[in-house]
Length: 83
Picture 1: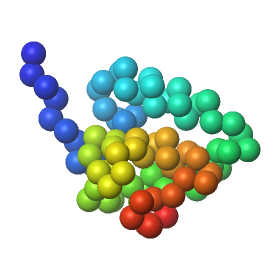
Picture 2: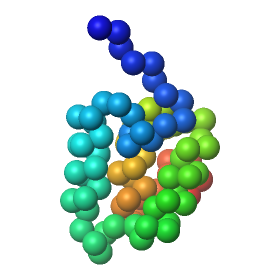
Picture 3: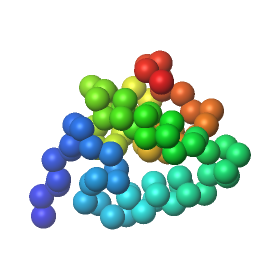
């Protein structure tokens, strides 16, 4: 079985590995509402991440986080100060 090629411009939610997708989705869902970024800001952050050269298969190469989790946390910050 071959290893899937990393995707330079994908979020975890777009990847085929359902285990990772479920883990990230569960982590985002478990963030309390008072700690969660509102949907508009969340989508704006993800849009910025999608255009970043440091995104690789949903992971930030600058810090190693899953960008969908970091973007969902209100106090989350981009390590490259893009948002």
